[in-house]
Length: 209
Image (tube, rainbow, N blue to C red; front, side, top):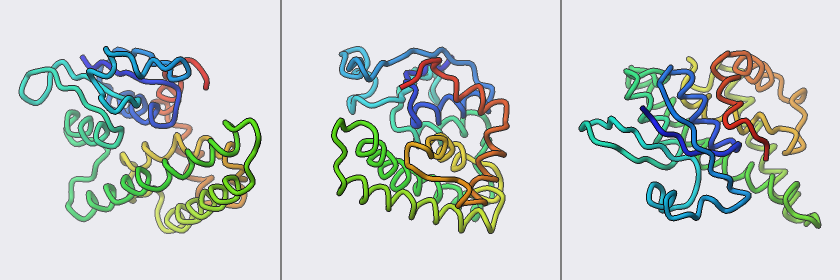
């Protein structure tokens, strides 16, 4: 059994989508970041970086419980645990998938997150921050658009790269982006959003933030 510690953020939903896609049994534990529950000692014992998501696999690779944090690492781990699902097996395709996973981890997540902060979280909008991160978000949508005009998915086949990126694009309105301006991204977004496991994973936990 896998224990998932999460909240209704894009990073949290990456992992719940992956668990649903792989059909792995899990228990969900909410960590309400709006109430600073990520700083409680019990959670810090699992993730000293006080960020969701985190998991504890009661049956780790050596048969012992394994706690893991960092959503990208968790996706790679869950792929391995489920026999390599959603990570291509040929070397070329695998590294392309990991490349796009790192693109999400290093670009899409941090920059979209900053756009969220300056466009939504701040009571008084700061034009410099809104412009800087709004422009960067649009640039990243452009990178996705170029890739998705060449391939159906980020790594040709549906993979952890798509699972990691979709929950962030699902907040396109928060970035003040019109997906009509990125037709390949919209096609990809609609295709992934129709997957039953994605629908289930996006509803975990059943709260909004």
